Length: 399
Image (tube, rainbow, N blue to C red):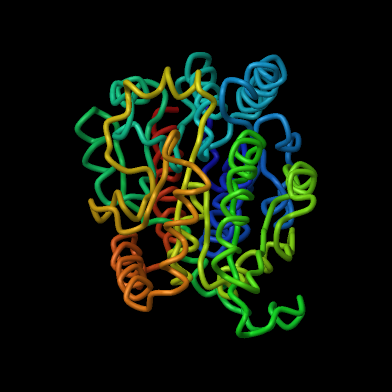
């Protein structure tokens, strides 16, 4: 039984893809700001977390996947990594295990750890959107998670109502608002005129997303360029899909700049007049930049056919979910066509009224996520540390 309350608190963070890596890095900064040397951080992360000193058990290449076509061939490797992480947790017994996003990967770890050692506290940071699809999963989560750090204002009451303790901490993407700058400098560096129409193309950070969406985005750009002379595209990407992006983007119909630097990604939102984005975390980042956008998503037909009966929300884009209206045009599955995307993008370039209406909606949505309040990563870190120290104290009292 652990009784030494003076030793550093060991926090094990585990993520499975680049968006979770970004959230994990922000949480690491929050933990260190509040706990300093009293916190020891271990686990699995990507470039952002390792840049802050995490010695990851392995890279994220095998776990950053989505969709049956891509997941199935990698199942043996994903399961092997689940065993590596859970065995490490069981051997080292961290004070708290924090599973960040990527539920198909991280929840397997939490289940395996809880089955073998129920005394290890487990936390879910970025819970799956079970309120949107297959709500029964929340009841299952209550068996292997002790706490959910909820990003959305309505999630805490949802999970509490299903027997799982939850706390709303705000969406960490809010903290990236200050990084949405440098657009003019980026245009100058890339040789893009200040009067040139610029479209940020954001096809996602998973291989399956890029494979399905980028060809459609390419065709939409070709159609849009016929109406917008001088159109230029900026495409920020991440290392795990950069090779695929470059291959699919060969002979792009208009001038294209592919960027891999994280700061350049945020500067590209500031530089762009409009964005075309896969639904996901990036749409909230674009919302913070105040850049009007059109969103889209497409799954393999089998994945979508199996998932569709369980989807219980009207929208896929977080801004629209929060506002309960389609403030951002979104095109999912069969509606995701080059013609539809091009037709929705054009007014955002040409109509001041359309631009202003969406920018106001984006601001309204980001306020609901906690903009203007304490940094969400600090709130998450504060809640996590209070929980972990309480659990540590309980262990000491029970010893």
